[in-house]
Length: 297
Image 1 (cartoon, rainbow, N blue to C red):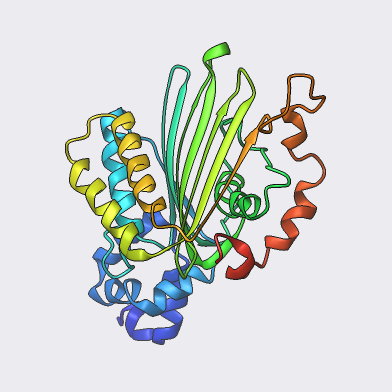
Image 2 (cartoon, one colour):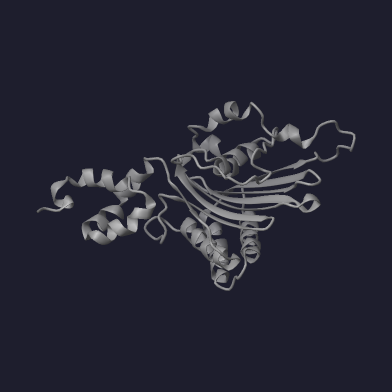
């Protein structure tokens, strides 16, 4: 009896194998050398990317485990498809929750999610929309909100989003840091929200060249094997982003309350959470190009 790879044309095999869920890939690769070669080929990778992207959720049991997996995602983000030990045709989210803390890191690859899988946790910043912020607002939607809401991004793009949320009255806060590959260059966006006192700050830098990103992430990865907690990893990640931002072509920031306005200002932070405007605003980004999508020159 002939095997499946002998009975079907190569292109048909590519289409079939490209649609396999992530969990079944290792077993399928082990059944046949032909299947393994096809699944690792450039044609199969590109075919998988033409389909909606599956999101894989990993939940380490310890903070040390989270830091270890997080370093692997950074490595995968930095390397090309042929060099990476992780399949960049899937988005991978690492989550760790304990008491009032929720920590996460997601590597999001370009395309649509299948099905859209927004974050189940309320991060406080989920609905935040920095209206009037110009390029920073576009970058916020294209990077952080695309990951949090499970919205599509260009096939050539990647987003690495790290964040944390803490519950607890006056001690509650949320922050996120994004590193974005646009297909041409890199961008960085950082946001911190004090949920108790309603203070929010964002800063965004764009036009960063690959050489500076790889240098900063290389330092991070060399240190990562000694890290035992998520906090250590997060501090090193932010330090790497700060190094990259030294080489930006442009930078914008946004804050609430607006600088220079007194306590009698009638506006509040709710003004900067989208209501019925979210869908209409994001229509401009459903089929984005790199010039308007994010971090353009």
